[in-house]
Amino acid sequence: MTPDELAAARDRVVPDVVAEGLHVLFCGINPGLMSAATGHHFARPGNRFWPVLHASGFTPRRLRPDEEQELLAYGLGITNVVARASARADELSDEEYREGGRILREKVTRLRPAWLAVVGVTAYRVAFADRKARIGPQDTPLGDTRVWVLPNPSGLNAHWSLDAMAAEYGRLRAAATD
Image (cartoon, rainbow, N blue to C red; front, side, top):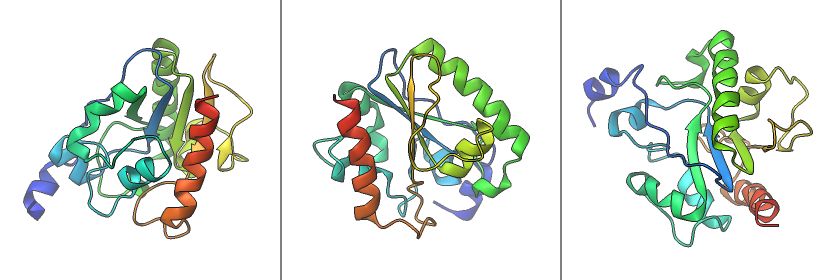
């Protein structure tokens, strides 16, 4: 992918991978430029979403971003807090996060997943005006949907190792299969 192709992907939207009644709807912060350029979620090679999803037991093998539709067969889906692509999440405004939270509430109400898993505590805090949110299950559901905040799988999130991240995702998987 050339720098020009990536730059041309700015502000594009990557289609959701969703269906009604999912076990878990994963929610990224917003698509990166590689995801927007390819049309697939978590497409940047350094992103750990796909390896962590497999290591935590959500999928029987490591899927590639272009196999994201296979998630539906496992009762899983993907959306984003903010739909538009950017090079970095810090390019998004608080207003975009809050509007994204409003749209996400509507989406969750319509699709009724058992769990919404937001991958990024800072995005969750701003989108849902919950400054005290921490990684893990949240006290306040969205309608009938329980909420779990997971560590952001971006390669830029050096605070979480792949193993620690897989363990946290695995806690959600265990809760989602109870």
